[in-house]
Structures are given as C-alpha cells and as structure tokens.
Length: 350
Image (cartoon, rainbow, N blue to C red; front, side):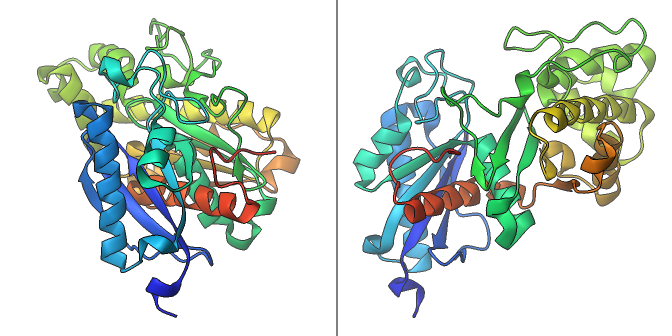
C-alpha cells in the first residue's frame, strides 16, 4: 500500500514563531523526515493562529500525499502554561500574550476547525514522550522516564508506562518549579536565584536561558572582570554564553556547571519520587558541539545521586531531533489515543 492508503495521525507543534507538522502511520512510521514549518501567527490572536494550524495540517497532508479521510486523529502541542485539556492559562503566557488568549481552549477550537479528534500536550511533555519512545522502542510501554527540557524556561515531562503523567489540573511534570537544594550549588556570596513564577531556588531559576541572563551571568561576570560578554546587552550575552562554553571558556563553564548541577539535583528528587528507567536532557543547552554536549550530560549524571540498585538500571540520554520532537511526540500521543479508543482530549497515564 502507498501512503495514500494507510490510516494516519497528524502531529502539530505550535510555537511562538512557527508551526511544525508531521504524519505518523498507525503502524508507527513517520512519513516526514525533517521540518515542515509555516508561521504560527500566535501574536495575531487565537482565530489567526487556529487558521495557521489548519494550514499546517493541510500542508503536511499535501506534502505526504495522504488524503484527509485517512486521518484518525490530530496531536497538538503548545508552550505552557495550559491545562491538561489545552486551555491556555487565565494569566496568558509569553507566547500567548494577547488578552484573547487568556483561558482560551485551543484544543477544542482546533477540533471544531478540523472536524477531527484532537489530543493535546504541552511542548515539554511532547518532547519527553518522543524521547521516551525513541529511546525504548518496543519496550516503551513497559518503561518510565523523566525529561528536563532547557529553554527560555525549564520544561519537562514524566512518562510512566509509555504515557505522559498529566495530573489533575494538567500541571504534572512542571519540573522547572520544583525546589532544589542550593547548598554547595551557589558560589560565594551568590544571591539566591529568583524565578519568574515567584519562587526562589527552583530548578528553572538556575537551569534556563532566563536564569543565565537574570541570575547566573551577572554573578559570574563579577568574578571574571574584563570578560567580553560584559560589553554585550544582557539578553544577547545570555544567548552567546553557550558558544563560549563550546570553546572551553572558564566563565561559561562555571555557568553551565551550575546548570548541570541543578538538573542533577532535580533528577535526584525524581529518583526518589518516581524512580524512572531513564533521565533525558533536551533543549538549546545540548544542541551544541559534541564535546560540550557530552560534557554537560556527564556533569548532570555526576550530580544525580542514585542508589546502587537504581544506577544499575537507569540510563542518561539526550532528547533526539529537538526541532521535530514536539510534533512527533504529540503524534505518538494521538496514535496511543486512537489505539486506546479515546482519541478525544488529552492522553494521560491511568
């Protein structure tokens, strides 16, 4: 049979700038090898954004030659915060800043527009689900994992028996807002870092791009007088730190050692809470040169305290295919919902 004859699900990854789409057959084959992107139009408001998602849906079907009647369900992921059923936070968010987005039910709106069941996950959960299934393959439904996705903030996801744990209000897996021990993590006279959520000393306050700009870089620039990054605007300087880290710059390595140690402490909490088979790290921090990427992951592992029994069975790995992980993750979620006969609404661990 050709792709036109095979039932499929479609994965739609919605971001602040673009939508990425993929197609997954019900027997588990992705029909798209790379990015299929169009503008997301989220800053133009909900109606424009829903139309952009519909265009992404139509476009990826045209690209793969799959007729609309072959689609059984659609997976959708967006940045958070949002509920388990795809209702954007009543406070809005960085990506959904217009008042019309506050409390907007993006999943139901897309379901009405497409006339197909839509399964929702936030982007961190989608990437976590993809990493889990790629890593474990045929054993995915018998394994558990925790993923930390380092970006502007710190997203993530908890996967149990192959399914994302969403929680009662859809807020499970918000790993960035778990408080971590700071003893031995901060440098001499380093201020306790603050998070945009209002917490102090949570994982995101150390392990995120925002943390570099607001908390880590100001401190370490004071310890490295004359460093070139001091001449840069703070937001730009924060984005440049990784390049310095790849080249072995001492200041940058101090910054990323603190981030890796924070993730290790977060994973130590996970080890005592969910005891997963695997710990995944993803996001811009590991989309880097191989030596830096491997050093960072090894440093995370070094700061994760496991019992001997746990260390014997646990693995540490990177989230693969970062740019495609969201679309592919929600496509997997949609496929699981179809197989479970529940392809309406979110897929959660039961």
